[in-house]
Image (cartoon, rainbow, N blue to C red; front, top):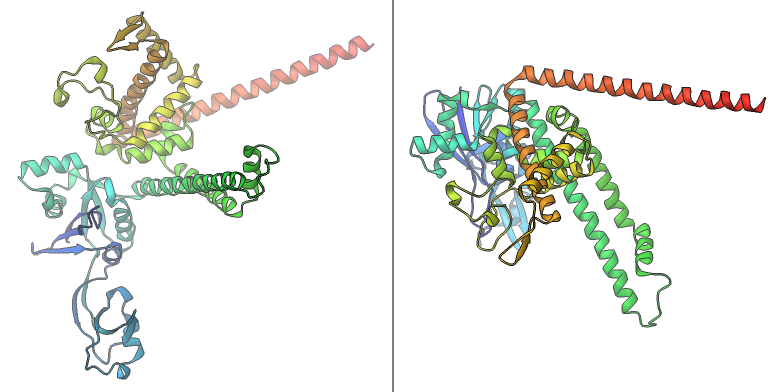
Length: 467
């Protein structure tokens, strides 16, 4: 059995500095082997156990077709080399430069049967973890992930640097596997959801960009026309006509619909959505997916305070924030301060509490009203601070929205964490959902029967008056 630590990294920094993924393998004999995976193809090779570790000179007897194209090494042809005598499959042109086949792999390594892989939970390594886990099910290997806060604690305890994470993860997955979480089908579904959500957002942005180009092109044609004629109808009417006739836009619209369907399909397979989000009035697939993808895995957050800070619904006072003035404790972008929260998740929370506001009689809608009433009771009059009015109706409303978002985040962390750690609780939630659906069905049935009786009474009364 081998224990493998993987420190996944994005392959290049913004400045172009190489940052390959690091792999550390502790063998059964405790010998340590280290590799660097320079690009995504190298990662894919490692997943399938065909990552080249040694190369040899090519021989005349080699069948080049048996080697992967990205595994072959080429060199520039020498000046005195007779290129025309080299077989065509062993030479190629790179622009005006003739390249000659030089080396082929002599040894490979990668995921094998019995391997135990340790990675960090969340972050850029999600897709790599997905591929390793899926392949591991076929070859008999297993993939585990460690929350980043736990890795940080181990790093401090063992006096390690961040650059040593691959070695540390290999050591920890060997000695302290109980701190890790197994990557199984459910975790892969969450990773798939993240990919589907990003695809959906890309499709939406592409469609919106196309619409903007159509409008700007139309405005340009109207204003820069040589005839200088006034358009027949308003620009908005012409814009709608142009959109309906644009084939490229129609393709983007169709793609966005397809992405929406795929997102809803994957979301329906995830128990977090089904058991926590779906029963909440006002939470649809779009908002739920956005929030789930932003959080990723609740086990990344040791406490609800960590999750609140991550989503930007915490209070910036005390601790590292010091004693801040009341008007600067609310989380917002300010000059000279780092906005280190997850912006997409924060926006999802705001959209969610706005839905609560629109559904005043829902459970969370009532909580929002209660919070608003308490805030108004605490601040009955409008005051002026540094030339700005505070505690107006609009200010109280926004305070209540964000306070509700904070309460919802606390509730979500508690319920989601409980769901992850207690399988019996998941069964209880399913039972509650079944009972809720049964009650809803019974209420709808009673409503239909009452309407039918009312219709029959009206018809009977009409017949009697006619007689």
